[in-house]
Image (tube, rainbow over all chains, first blue to last red):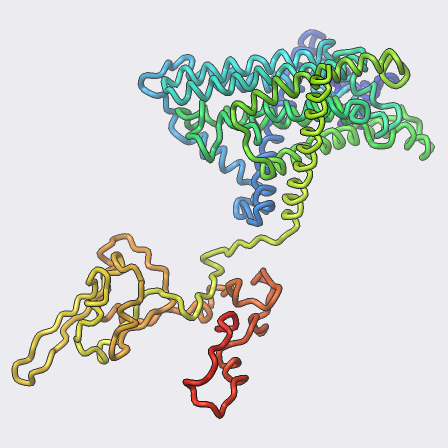
Length: 386
Length: 210
C-alpha cells in the first residue's frame, strides 16, 4: 500500500506515482541499517492495521449514525449522554458485549459454534484488501479485485450455516438455512451486475474500474451507463448484508434472533461487527463500481489546471489524495444513510417474496442488463469501454 | 410470443410501481428527519396531567363518616374502613382507613359516590415501589398532597397535545402564557344567556368543553 499522508517526505517522492510512502518508509529503515527484506517485512503490517482500524472506526460511526438517524426518522432523540451527541454509544455497546460472559450452550458443538462467527467476519474484513481510496491508496491492487470480493463473500453463508447448525437449536438451524439461502440466491444477480461493469472497464481490478470512470467527472460515472445494474447491485448488497427489507434471518421484531439465538457476548459482537463492516464495505463498493470511487464530481485535473498548478506537484498530490479519501467515504456514507432510511421505509419481505425477487426478478433483469451492456459495448465502443 | 411480451410489460409496470411507492415512502421518512423529536425526557421533563386525571386517591380523615359507601361501590371492595361502634355516643369511631394502590384500578367510583367528598383523585402517578406492600396507603399516606409537576423546580413541565394552542404540536416551543385551543368552560359560560335558569341553558358544544 502506498499512502499519502506525509507531505514533506522527499526520498519517496516519485513524479509518476506521486507520493510513495512505502518507499520512503523502507529507505528510512534501510538508512538505520536494516536489510531491504526486514524493512519490507516491517512495512507490511502497517497498511493492514490501518485498514482494520478504519473498518472498525467505520463500524462505530455506522452504529452511531444508525441509531441517530433511526431516532430522527421516528422523531426520537436517540443516544445522548455517552459523549457529545452520544458518539461514544457504540463504544459503550461494544464494551458491554466484551465484558459479557462467553456462553457456549451445553449440548452445542463448541468448535463449530466458535468457528461460525469467525468465518462470517474474516471474509468481510479480507474484502477490504481491494477497496481503493485513491489511485495508490489500497492494500493490494489485485488483478481479480472485484472477483475476489465476490468469492470471499460466498464464504459467509458457510459460517452462517455452521453457527446455525452448531447451536443445537432448531430455530437457529432454520435461521441459518434461511440466511444461507438468501446469501446464495442474491449472489448471482450481484455477480451479474458486477460483470456488466467489468465488461465496460475491461478489468476486474477495482482501480481500473474507477479509472475508467474518471474522464469527465460526475458525467462519466457508471451510474449513468448502468442505472439498472446500480439498482440491482444495491438491492443485492442490502440482501447480502441482511439489512431491512431483507433482514428476515434475524428479524428482530418477529423472531428471537435466527442463527444468532444462542450467541452472546463477544461471539455475538462478531456477527454484529461483521454485518456492519459488510454494510460499509458494500457501500464502498457501490461507490467504487457506480459512483466513480475516489473521483470528485469535477475532474481534479481540470481544477488543478484552472488554478494553474501542475498535477504532479507534491502539494497537489496530497490534496487530491485527501479529496479522494473524503469523496470515497462521503459517497459510501451517503449510501449508508440511504440504507438506514430504507430500513424505516420498507416493510420486511417474506421468505418466498425474497426468493421470488431474487430468482424471478433480479436474475432475469441482471441477465438482460448484461446482454444490453454487451450490445451497447459493440455498438458504441467509445461510451461503453470498447 | 404475445404472452411473453405481456409478461415483460407486467414486469415493467410492477417495477415502475415499486419504484414509485419506494420514492413516496422515502419522501415520508426523509420529511420526518427535519421534525423536532416529540420525546418528553421524563425525569427532567414531565407532561402536566389533565384536570380530570385519575391518579392516586387523596383522603381526608376528618370528613369521613365511616359510611362504607366507597367499599360498596368499589369493584373489589378495596378500601378498608376500620371503625368501632362507640356504645356511649352511639356513633361510629373511625380508627383507620386504607387503600392498597397495588390493587386499586383507579376507576374513581369511591370518589364519585363519597357522600362527604372526603375522597378525591390527584394527579400523582409515580407509584413505583420496591415492595408491593408499601403501596398499601393508610390514612396518613392518603392524606398527603402530591407535588405538582408545575411547582417542582427540578422538572420542566410540558403541556399535553390538547392543551396547546391551535396548530401547535410541540410543547417545547410554546410559552406558558399562550392559551390552549378552544374555550375554557368559564369562557363558554360567559357567552350563554344569563337570564335563563341554569336548567334551561342549552348544553355547550362538547368539543369546546374544558
